[in-house]
Length: 468
Image (cartoon, rainbow, N blue to C red):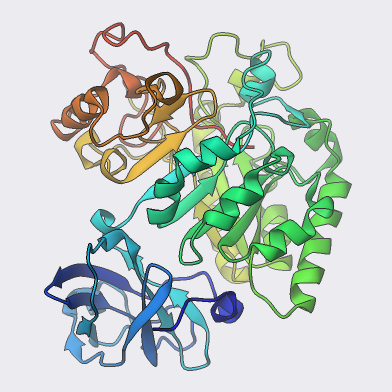
C-alpha cells in the first residue's frame, strides 16, 4: 500500500466535497457509505475518484457514485441525484480505529478535497503550544491577568498527548500565547499525521522569521489564521498593543509569495477579525484583504468576559465590556448581513468561529445572548473533543468556563474515563448544564448559569475560549 506523502497535497483545496456517513469494519472488509460532489468546482461535479486513507496509507479508491441521494439533491440545489457511494475495501487490520479513516475526493481537474465525516468518526484536539506572548492585546487573559500562564510545551508534554495527536481529525495548536514563541512546537508538528487538518492562530509578528517552519509543515498545517481585528493603524494599536499592522501584513504577503513560488496551495493564509463595536464598520476592508490571499475570512465575536474577575476597566484603552456586540446587536446584525452579500460577490468564504458560529440575531434573549440557542444535549463536544492548556486545565472545549480537572496533577488526559468528565458528559446528554459550562457564551449554553454547585469538584471558575 502506498504511503500518504506531502506531494499528494500539492493541489489540495479547502472546500466541501461531500460527507462520509458510515464506517464499518468486519473480517478484513471496510464498508464505507456516503456521498460526494465537488461543490467548489464550476459547475458542480462528482469527483473522478475518492482516495481512501487509513492511518498514513492509501488503502483503496472509490469510483462508483451511482447511488441515489435524494436528501442531498433536495438540500443542495443543482447537485446531481446520483452522488452516493457504498464501497467495500479489503484490507487486513489487527485493531481497526474508525478515527484513522479519511476520504479525499479528486475532481476532474485534479484538485483534492477532504470529505467531512459524521461526528462519531471525528476527534477535535486543541493543544496550547505556549503561554508566552509578544503582544499585550486588550482582549486576552495574558493582558487581563498578570503572569496568567508562561509555560512552554515540553517534549514530555508532547509525548503525553501523542496518542491524541495520532487519532485527531482536526488539531488546533492554539492557546493564550503566540504560536511562534514555542520552542518545541515543531516536534508536535512532526508527530502530526498528514491526514489531519491542522489550524494555527498567530498574531503574525514573527511570521517572517518562521517561513520555513510553516512551509515545511504544510501539510499537515492547512490554515494559518492571522489575528488582526482592525486594518486601521490607530485602532490596531489599541486592540493589539505592541504590534505593527504594516509589519504583519508584509509578513503575510511574504509567506504567500514564497508559497506560490513553490507551486503549493498550503497553508491557506486567513485573516481573522474579532467583531466588536469598535470595528464592525471594517467588514468590507477585511473581505477585500481575504480576496488578496486565499479568499477565506475567519470571523469571531468578541468574547464575553463578564465572569472574569480582573477584566479591563471601563476607562481603559479598549473599554472591553462596552465593546461587546450585544450592546449594538441590531446595527452589527445589519452590517453582517451586508458583509455576507459583499463576500459572495467577491468570492470570499466567511468562516464563523468561536462560541457563536453564525451571524447573530438583532435581538437578545433573557440571558443577553444574541446568537441562536440550541439545547445543550445537542452539543457534540463532550464526545469528540478535548482542549488542553499547559497550566493543567483540560476541558471538552475552550468555551467551558472552568476545567474538568487538572491533567498535570492527576497525571491523566483521559476524558472518556475520568469520573468528573463522565459525570459532566452525562449531565449534558440529559440537558443539564454542568458547572464547567456555567455562563459560557456558546450556542448550547447561551450565557445561562448552571444550577450545579460549583464547589463539588473544587474547581475555580475560569473563562475560556481564547486564542492568540
